[in-house]
Length: 473
Image (cartoon, rainbow, N blue to C red; front, top):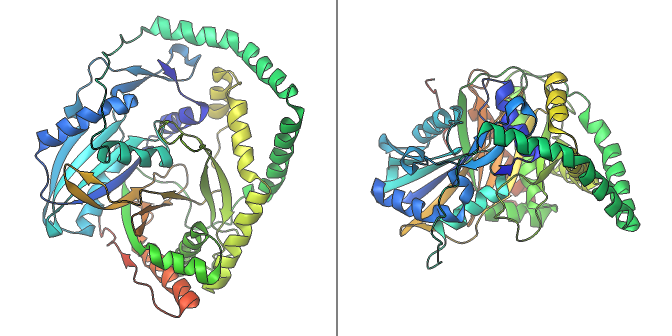
């Protein structure tokens, strides 16, 4: 029985506060065919689940909310419930696959079972088949979610332990008693942490100063964004699209114009949002598109810890600039300044502090003082994936398309994922308010091409996945 961390609990409560939100992250792995038989695939996944024990655990709420939710073994775990199969009318292309992903990801996971699903999808063009992986954000973040691919698909010859017998599901009274005990011990834990800090004055002082600098840097970032059609109420249904970009193109941009791969993709996304705003008849202004950019706090070797260990930067995308090189320069300058001022340290400090706040107080504070946020307009996650080709039952993995959920008043989110020699931008949009998601996708494609031309004088070879024309709820 494991308690959820404060951040993991936030992702659970986000669904409780908004009936339209599904906080599942996902990805679409496309393989060369032929697809394996369903039972063959089930047996393969089942044999690997002992490597990820969380996949056999479900969520339980503590009575009276005196403690955070906990993970407990599901005594009735049925892998066939979690692994599903469907087919597209042949030959299924990008548009048909995008429509299916939008429908699957919009639906909430069953809280009475482990919070994950795998969907086998056949009928794709070129004799391909796909696997839609759907996992609740309270279980994994982008880095640990990526590691699941290595666990499931790239462990040939690895000795896999037999799964231990499921532990008895605790009674509600046991959950309450343990949570009450944790509350009684919390002051001692907090005092112990404070004494440990006092015993290391130099590192503690550096951390305090770094956090203070980060909070000062964060102050202008959290001011309300300039109003636009990019934020507002969202519904339950989703649209989905993606853009494919050769990794060599982004490397050429980095080599020719400076900065990092992350700077280049953020500049391309900036171009996409600028195009979207102009197509809607809105004039792009500075601080119109602040983006939440997650930052991993994992140390090397912690990729297989399946919980969220992230902080974040808030990066205003410079959509008011029309020149692609100026956009890249502005992004690079801002990101470097935020890192130098340790803005991510603020999120880490708050996460550490939250672990010493009694859960009932923290939960009531979140529920009682929740108000519509206006400082974040989009989220852009960038996760490096495996560089070597992975296989599933002998079938090579061709590409991985990422999916990021949206919530609150954020109507569009972008996930960037690299695999082998390709980068894919997965674009999630609210169904009702973003019928023009393809404009954003084309804008990202054009942004990469413009940056590459500025860096090398040649055009990009990026390709855009077709945006779904419609998704029937």
